[in-house]
Image 1 (cartoon, rainbow, N blue to C red):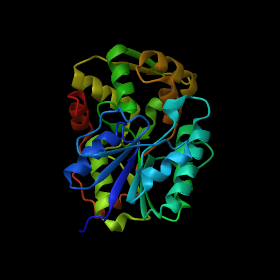
Image 2: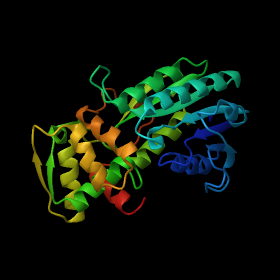
Image 3: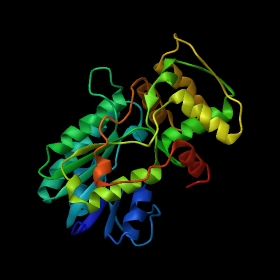
Image 4: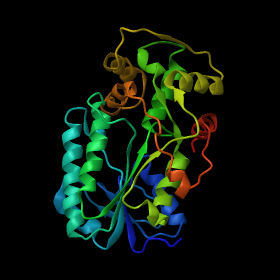
Length: 299
C-alpha cells in the first residue's frame, strides 16, 4: 500500500493520543506537523511545531499550509465543564472553514462510540456532532469511534485506577452493569496510523474496540485482581450517574471538567456494531488484562 503524499498535521498533538501518534508516524517515515497552543511544549524529536488554536481561526491558515491529511484529536472538556459543547462546535466549524480554504484532502477523526438518540450523554452527543460538522467539509473524513481507551495517562483509565486503588468498597449506580468494549491505546494508535496508510478507509466510519465486551463492574474487578487488591462493589438503584460524578471527581486526579462528562456517559452502552475495519487493518487486538498491565507499567 502506498503512503499518503504530503505532510500530516496532528491537532491535539500534546494530548494522550496525540503524542503517541506523533511518535508512531515519525517512526513510520511521515513528515509530521504538530499544532500546539504553546510552542514551549515538548514534542517528539523530528516533528515540526506550529502554534495554533481551534478557537482562534486566524491561527489555522499557517497550521494547514501544505498539509495533505490532518488528524482531528481536539476536544474542549479540559477548558471547563460549562459550554464545552459550544466550544467543540465552534472549533470544528473554524477548522472546516480553514481546511476548505487550504484544500485539505483528508481528515482522520477520533471520536466516541455510542448509539444515536436523545438519551446520549452531552459528551457523546458533542463527539457525534463534531463528526457531522467535519463530514460537511470539502475533504474526505474518516471517523473512528472508540469506547474506553486503556493507557497510562488516559482519563478513563486514570479514573478506574484511582477508584480501584482508593476505594475498596464502592457504592455505585446502575451504570456499573453497562457494557463497553475497552481498547488498548497501542491498538488505537495502530488504527489511526493504518487509516493514513490505507486509502480504503477514506470517507468511512468505523467502530474500534478491543476483543472483549465487559461491564464497568467487570473492568474494575479485573483491574483489582491484577493489582492484587480486594474490591467490593454494591450497586444501588437510587444513585444516578450525575450524582456519582461528584464523588468520582473528588476521588480521582482527573479534572472534574473531564471526569464528570465521562461518568455521565457511562449510562450509554459503547460496543462495536461494525467490525469491518478489521478487514482493512487486521490487528491482533490486546485483551483487557494485557492492556491494563501495559498501562500500569507506563506504556
